[in-house]
Structure formats: structure tokens, C-alpha cells
Length: 157
Image 1 (cartoon, one colour):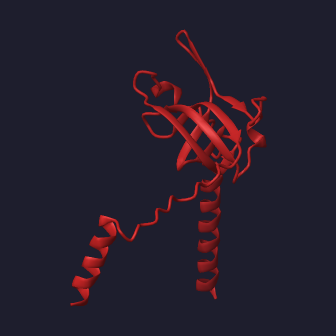
Image 2 (cartoon, rainbow, N blue to C red; image 1 turned 180 degrees about the vertical axis):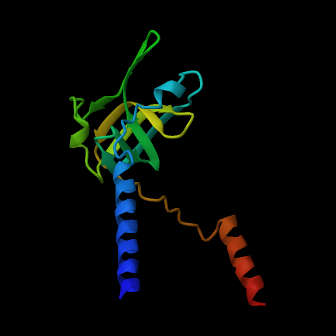
């Protein structure tokens, strides 16, 4: 009986310690915490994409689109200001919390050295229209049609 109580007590203590460790981890850190320290306009390549939003995290001021983490920022450093402009399809101001998964956006900004994109513009857009593939008919008298027939005849022999 003592062994059973001892095992239960060890398991319970282990679960409690694990739970406390998880609770002590930092959950929400702003997107700007370490990014501004490593940011330089000279070191970052421009970025532009039209993409569907995969995830929005307003607490961290970031979203995921085009398989990139897009950071929404409001930075002042040196003599420059970088603020992400959020707007709807008509160009009216927009809140980050109003963006939803599945919506289409246009993102312009800079690729950060440590990964992700620092956005200068995020604009909600309408879903792009799919273009139909161009189908060209091959004339029976064309050289291409003759080559296709010759190859088919060669395979059959």
C-alpha cells in the first residue's frame, strides 16, 4: 500500500511541477521586442505579396500570410519612423483585430534579417480572379501536329 501511495505522490508532484513550469513561460511578447535592435533599412530586402491570411495574432501584433510572419510595427529610431499602415480595399484605416483568417491582403515591407517581414503596408483586398489557362488548338497542317503524329507512330512500331 505504501508503494502505491508513494508512486501516486511522485506522479502528482511531477505533474504540478510541469504545470508550474509551463505557467511561468512568457506567453505573449510584443512583436517589436527584439526586432528593432537588429533592424536596418540597408540590410533588409523589400517584400511585396498578395496572400491569404493564415493566422492573426493581435496581441503579438503579427499575422501569418504568404508563409511568412508579418510584423505590424510602430517604430521610431534614429531620424526615421516606420509605422505599419493598415487599410481596407477602399483605402480607409483599419484595425489589426478586424483582419480574419482567409481574407486576402496586399503586404509591402521589408524582410527582416532574422526572418519574417516588417510590414509598412497591409491592405485588405478582394480575392484575385483566377485566370483561365490559354488553350491553343493545333492545326492539322502544322509542323507541331506532324511531329506529334510521327512520335505516336514511332511508339506504335
